[in-house]
Image 1 (tube, rainbow, N blue to C red):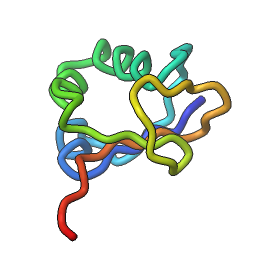
Image 2 (cartoon, rainbow, N blue to C red):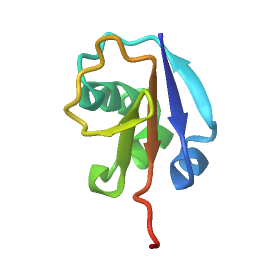
Image 3 (cartoon, rainbow, N blue to C red):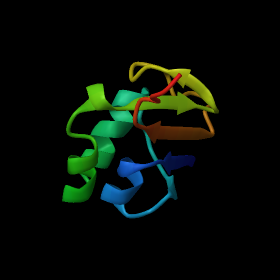
Length: 82
């Protein structure tokens, strides 16, 4: 079971700030594909991965990062500002 957190417009599109997901996904990208297969709202939120950043256990990472041992995955738009 992995805690999946959504921030900013990702949360608005999906409709929840956090959920627990039972997954067999090996990587973050695999998890995204599983989520996109759930409902249209996930498909909309993950339509353009270049507009998203991801963190596993509060460390910035990439979509090809392994999920083995990960307890939390967070999706959010790129940070702006200086």
